[in-house]
Image (cartoon, rainbow, N blue to C red; front, top):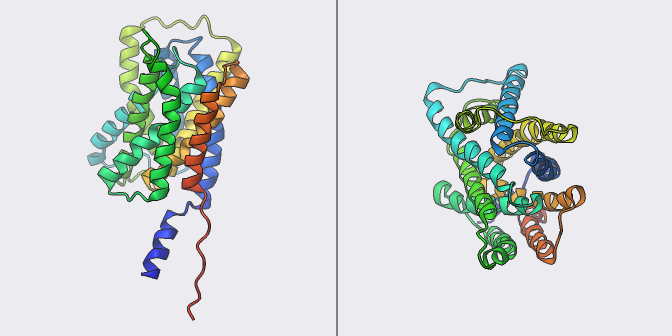
Length: 309
């Protein structure tokens, strides 16, 4: 029994590589929210996302080739990869882009990270992952934080919080994608898997873009907007998205998902500092709850070494 208990504790620990990825993703993906908010003020959501998925997807596949990764998946995996890409990428990118036209970047970041709630529940149902008291408590704290932001909006007379609902739908899609990635061994490298998801998931976005916006307007793009767009493409997508795919490959889906809860901390405060968005008491309390949830999952005391004698 002691050996089994020690094994479970070891399996729950987050390895150093994952900690490094979590820190990098938290900071860089957090800064992505004010960058995206700035870009969608100058480009339509369709044009913005087409540029994102096309440039980032091709860049990742080129990097995979240059680093010697296996790029082409086996024939029988193309259909599952296409389904994963549409759920994970197509839905996420379009829903978030449209949400940001009617909601601030900071609050959008917090709502996006209801994703761990959905990924954890799906991980239990689909992957048979075990939920211990830490994960359950973290989920409760995270949900309470989201409720602090959403309930006042729902209570406003005559206001339909479309942006909020779109962000929650995007979070559910991301959670499904996180669990879906764990269902198979994809038999290709991390960069290639990330790149194919963006390229394949970008196809429905490009088709809709060609139909709905045949003459895209780039006239309002400023040098600052162009810099923000470059950040979204090369930092948030090429680096952070592939790092998250790597994180999901080395951690259980529920822990990988919950570990991203630090991102809205950076998203909220960077949006306040860079874009002048207001930060209220509800925002602060929501972040405290989210940080507490994160700490429960990631901060663990090392197991005591028991004497064999």
